[in-house]
Amino acid sequence: MSQRILIIGAGFGGVWSALSAVRALDIAGRQDVEVALIAPEPTMYMRPRLYEADISTARPSVLDLLDIVGVRYIQGTVSRISTDDHKVEYALDSGACSIVYDRLVLASGSKVFMPSSVEARGTPPRLSSLPESTPGRNTVVVAGGGFTGIEAATELPSLFMVEKHNEVGPELGPGPRPVILQALQELGVTFYTGESVVAVDADGAVLSSGKRIEAKTVIWTVGVRASALTEQISGAQHDQSGRLLVDDNLKVIGVQDVFATGDAAHARTNDKGHMAMMSCQHAIYSAFPRRSSGHNAAQDLLGLPLHKYRQPYYVTCLDLGGSGAVVTQGWDREVLLTGVAAKHYKQQINQSLIYPPAANRAEALAVARPDIEYEEKDGVLQYRLD
Image 1 (cartoon, rainbow, N blue to C red):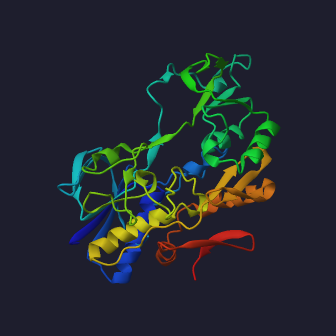
Image 2 (cartoon, rainbow, N blue to C red):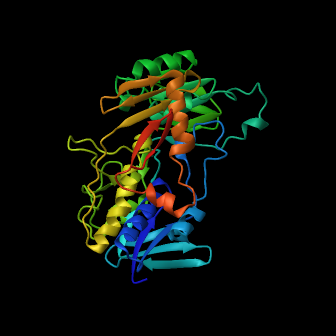
Image 3 (spheres, rainbow, N blue to C red):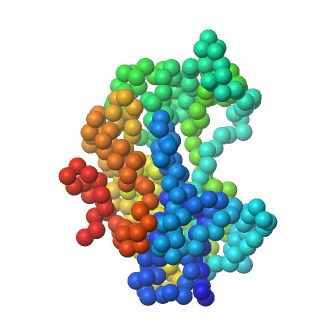
């Protein structure tokens, strides 16, 4: 192979970038360009499902899929990116290695962010080892009353939720809030607004008001920050979450031959100033930027027209545990579905639609189009292939 498109990350962004790059190269009839993907393991972790009780199927392997479409998988943890040299250094058990690229797609995702102002002390024992009478054994504190916090809170018993803003679900807006508040009340969730968790230890959490809650389990959902690898893209600009600023083609602004996608990219979704959200809050339409980045990396390398990333639909689907779910559409978050119907919709997304395609080359590349859309047919969400 004389040229290479290198993708960092095996999550949603990395895998879809790889598939869309291969598709673009196939259409162009180019067999002399290698698509390579580097990640610690060939696994796509279904982070949108981590609030669920059973996540036994939430880490599918993508090794067979990458192999069948012709993507070279490289096992390793990236340690350094040199955009001047077009080189990436990575670590293996056997030692340090490096690889050069012609185009790079950074799809390294994000990590939970805990500010230094929050003290975390002590490592509690496993709950199963504690007597039932232990204070706080069956109590859970969820720090953060946003999208992830609400989904976690509605799945667990004996729960307290803490949100620093004056409203639960501040980023979700007023549209679905009555449905959310009703669900929290029905499920017996105690929530504190206008408060923050300022300290965590092995026996509980302390709030900004000084109130202490005895709890052996604290779940931190206050926010995420883009992968630290974004800081290694020399000459790039970043937003407050560490994401790389990209243009309408998902190319990193001010940097040659580097694209970014998923939680690593601060991307514009439309011409009204709305930006892509982090952590799959775009629900079923979250795959749009992932496909565009790989497609455009290949097109750019071949000197062909790029696909302008736009997301015409914005859908939010929030699980509410035993109270069902709520589905909204548009940036004003108009409520579309609630209750059982919304729950069915959410389950289709979480348990089917967001998963990588089967290891069938033709089928996988068919759904890797950057302009792919979804439709509901006979009550089932699926790709529209016409």
